[in-house]
Image 1 (spheres, rainbow, N blue to C red):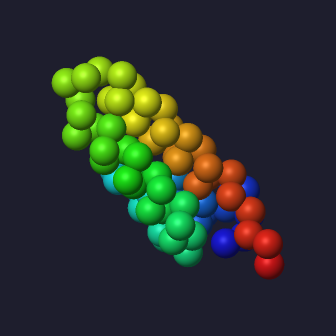
Image 2: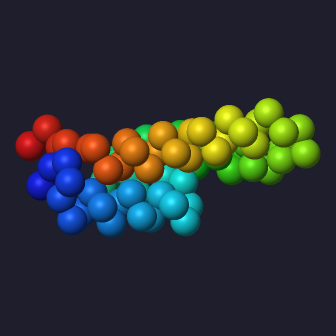
Length: 74
């Protein structure tokens, strides 16, 4: 990826809107993608407890911002 604000990062951020962690997977960051996906899917699965769903929404927002601001170390 070219850096913050690049087209690749915008696409990755949009991917995260639809499925948390997908943007990190597009960027090639498997561990970050797995962590974001597990936390968000688990939190949304426990939606009736309210708190996990709110935390999952916050983590999903964090994953979108993380994908948009990612800079590779290349």
